Image (cartoon, rainbow, N blue to C red; front, side, top):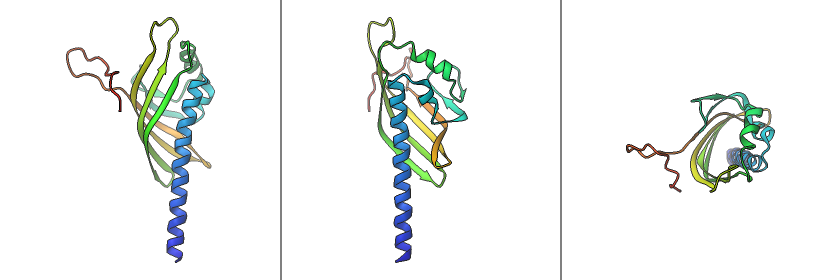
Length: 155
């Protein structure tokens, strides 16, 4: 009986951790919608390795001023819709992956941005919460002579 109780307690803790990671992802979407650079940066570990859509090939941590400058290029709120995220917990490490749909309108643009991207997050427990230590965002591209992004794909 004690073994079953311990297993249930462990499973409950894992489910809570998964819920906490999904809540962190939802909080990032909210921060982007509100164009709040500090809130966007908050869940990242200092010096986190970030492979984002923007050049260069790698970013180390979130630069709040650079992020705010990017946010200021949008005429509308930026909607980020997380979908189909899978979260795996192993003690003080979490791994999450899924899709994100990005929508909004850039200043001066005559059409909305609307595309799906792939997202992978690696997190470590920090105190009682989670911090992103690695993020990889990508958009597939057509492997023909155009090498154009495949913004027309959806899950």
